[in-house]
Length: 405
Image 1 (spheres, rainbow, N blue to C red):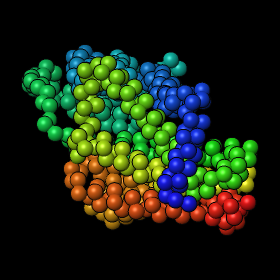
Image 2: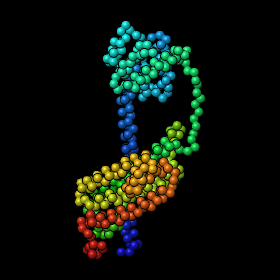
Image 3: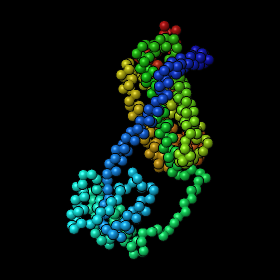
Image 4: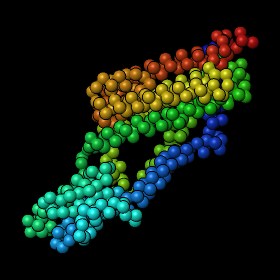
């Protein structure tokens, strides 16, 4: 078979699979899957935060004091909390109670109240206060002790009024900070992993459907199985690129509608390599997708039933989760043997290198890594095509359609 004929057959299979995948209502639903995936997270988070907020609104810190001492404590508490700890999610509300005859009994009785949840109670002289607290609120007890210390100092220095008035001036850094680069590395690695696992899994579903309705046997009788393998891989990649382009356009337009404060916060999450990062991300996505897609197609061809195909895909998924965790952990240890190993091992290399692109400005290592991964993609596709043929035909098949007939 000539090279041009093989390419033509491969592209025929690719066009067939691409059309069968993209020109369906199911693919339109598939495009919206990220909304469901990432939308559920905020919804669950909002529900959990509402539950926490409802419980926090009942929590109280109590100081038993009277007169000028109570006024000083309340003023210092409001000043010490500041805007970062005001409202829900900060320290529990401070309540000042007037002392009764037996202050210790009064403090213990507060923990039995039904309408509020008292976490810590302070009473006694400021130079030697007594603080009761529930076991998990030791930090709040420390806060009350510090409040007593500050109140005593304020009384001796003339009152709780602040003596210093700072001028706050925001400064925009000229380059991304180390924190922003680390955040960019994490989000880039996570995005690459999610895209690969979500998009390359299409191969399993395609193989399950075609093994069930015997389409794969019809294709095997008409076209060399190597062309079937490459055509399916190209079609999978084409639909993945279409998916990426769709969401790139959507997110690009959404970014224009963001409030200035949110846009500024997102601008701080910037990769170290600058404008070259989108191209490096696309290159690593292509290489990792072709590598993982070839593995999924090969594994799907070894199964005789859809149930077996799903069973084969599970170990691959677990293995890729481990590779993701390994590369993410290694990215936090620059220069270590873990980072070097994750960048060399072919299945973790794309994740490790995209994290490196976000946290390090050097470009030469990426040229070497892309060449290294291209070699492994070629090896994986070559071996995968052979195992794909054997899996589909359940034997070492003849090399030509004439001999097969």
